[in-house]
Length: 473
Image (cartoon, rainbow, N blue to C red; front, side, top):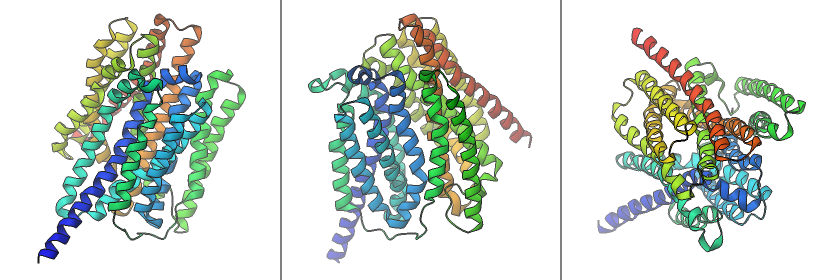
């Protein structure tokens, strides 16, 4: 009896130790995403990067992550989720080392692309492994910790990034924001090797690699000219690439239809594209996150390079946004699926109002510290809207397609982020072509903020209309 009890206790401890390894890798990924923004001015100074190259430091990571999410999720089913997770952590740690030691901006951008691919290997496996290794009575607590760890990483990002860059550890400047991943990644990898149990493969169906290739080419053909167009003076090939992107998107969809007819694995399940609510929800998410991601990329540069604030001060000004997201998510989480349309519409109005105030403060030359309050409002709106919207969209997906539906939503969220950084970067740097004075930085930021503000206004109008439609229906 004692031996059985000791065995059960040891198995339980191993489960939670494995969870710590899984969530440590998740925390590392989330922290890395938000930390890099604040290091951009230091990277530009240290490596002599151009404005366009700074955009690629962010965009290439997001694109690689988006392209890899769906196929690597399926790949985990085939070769083993624990194995793919360990490969991802090892690759992410190694590419972080390469980022931290990068001698030039080209090496940094290449290493960031590898980071994004390795993150796409890690992330889809985490919750899938949690669902398998935890019994029903412990699963709720384990998954609840996932949200807490994600929120902690989002809040810590601006603060940790500001502290590390401002501290200039050993005179390394921005490099420690990547090198800090080494001990974290190695601890996570050691924990995964020691405590993750063997998990039987769930599928023998290989991922849709041909669809992945077409999907990635279509997105790259759209984003590349948006990032590079201003630098080259918008030659004809930029518009030709955008047209090619549309052609590749059509070919990708036809390939998915063909695979569906043959009963083969699809990157984007065709059944999902027939649901107008699901498609509209995915577009809603992509447009919303394009506004937010581009704004924080631009604001990190504006606060430091434009207003001369320290990385730490800039991080403190931006931190209220993730704090607001956490508070609102906690407060509205108890509502479950109730009042979804009303929550989305009210939240979008709050985000729009917050962005309008941010733009007024920027353009009127007022103190940057005042930006903390509207960023908190934007965060509260975001934290209220996202859970309700994700629940509404994923409720349209049947059981067999639930994982694919969630993956599609996350992938297009990342694509929206890449597009937002590219578009707002174009607007911001176009204004700055006339000079780099504080007044021009304010004009550039105010111009770039028109994109997220107008996008959120359109989404708010759409959400309010849908809320009235649901209420009358």
